[in-house]
Amino acid sequence: MVAPLLLLLPLVFTPSPIKAATQWTGMNQAGMEFCLSDTAPTGFNSPGCDPGTMGEHYFGPANSSLDNFRKLGSNVVRVPLSWERLQPVLNGPLTSDYAAYVDSLITRETTNGSLFVIDIHNYGRYKGLQLGSVDVPYDAFYNLWEQLANKYKGNEKVVFGLMNQPGGTLQAPAGPSIQEWWGTIYNTAIQRIRATGATNRILVQATCKAFGQNFFSDTCGVGGISNAEGALSLSDPLGKTSIDIHQFINTDRNGGSGECTHDFIPILNPITTYLRAHQKTAWLGEFGVGWSDTCIASLSSLMTYLSDNSDVWPGWIYWVAGPAWGDPRNGGYAFSVEPPASGVGERPQVTVIKSYFVDKDLANKQTNNTVEDQERKPSGTGSGSGARGRVVGAGWMVGMLVGVFGVVALLL
Ligand SMILES: *[C@@H]1O[C@H](CO)[C@@H](O)[C@H](O)[C@H]1NC(C)=O
Ligand SMILES: *[C@@H]1O[C@H](CO)[C@@H](O)[C@H](O)[C@H]1NC(C)=O
Ligand SMILES: *[C@@H]1O[C@H](CO)[C@@H](O)[C@H](O)[C@H]1NC(C)=O
Image (tube, rainbow, N blue to C red; front, side):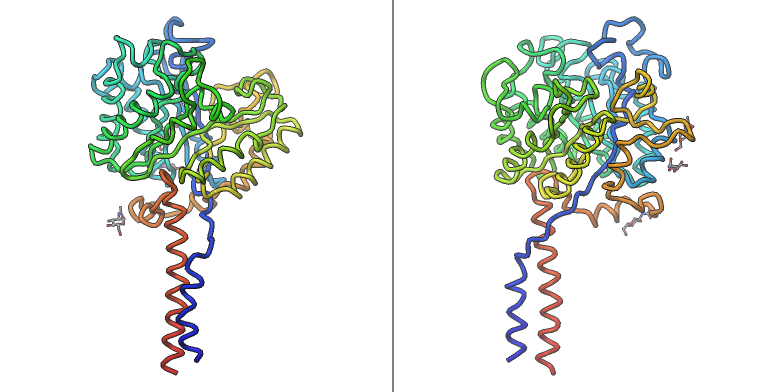
């Protein structure tokens, strides 16, 4: 009688609600976009910015900083980039020195086991002109991504961040509406990327600066649908596209200053519910706080929250490290966690987030991207298939084990 009972157990155990753990945790390394793509205060028309000089107008991440976060367990680096410097002529080749430098960074980080998010940090513009205008037709944007896809389709650790904060600091109405971003631009770019054979993960951002507080309500001042409605039409044949949300809790919730007068969780919680209801996933692609006790407490709660809701939030990336933010205690950017000069100590934000970095032994891993990616698939991006994949996988394993015991019991 024992054996048949055991054989039934797999049916009981299969739907066990095993939650997918957070998979991708890391750091934005900003500076490569400075002076050009960034619209204010040193915007596109600033002298010398186009294309500008590395170390003067824009700044590559420090190897020591990249290594520092990887050693702490960070397994994704997102690097804001300037479309203009990558591709100085629309529809032209990606052969600039800048593109070559980006390529060397990608090799360095992905060979060392980290994901690398190519973040086109252009706010829906090229040389200050709106995407969708006569000068910057949508097709130029698809061309950029088709070329990047062809270049990086052999490296699964490269993530395609299609466009940072469309409708950003220079607000619509001149640019495409939310409806056009979700209904046309993103889906066409994804189709063009997939047509190259690239299976890389993709991140697409909500418009109106990608901020969580705008997700359900705001129409970026141009009317029409909200991001929450727009994102329902997102379509990736591989289900490897996630929404990229940004969230700050300073007074304006825009990441511009270091005080914390809001809290993350009340803003993100409705998005979590939405993601589950619609079987979508999101990354928190930018979030950062100042160093006050209030801010650090909020950051700590956020870390717990994202960990508790990792089925729909598989990745997060702190804003920000980078060599050119200055000393936050001395007039620099309050959110900066660039490792200070030796002997000064770690930034308080890092003391919180480092214990949530998921890949503690990354620095010691023998890197073989193929094997590691096979182990990780499905990735939990796109339609939430990752979470389901893991549940099914785990159920199958339990089923196998119990099944084997059942057979053994039968034989006995
Ligand atoms: C950073 O590391 C790469 C190798 O990963 C090396 O080629 C490059 O020269 C280093 N950069 C600096 C500034 O040391
Ligand atoms: C990986 O990182 C180490 C430092 O941790 C660096 O020395 C090495 O050059 C990197 N690998 C590549 C391929 O750049
Ligand atoms: C990585 O692992 C795959 C699958 O086992 C193997 O085919 C490939 O040769 C390995 N690559 C390296 C560089 O070791």
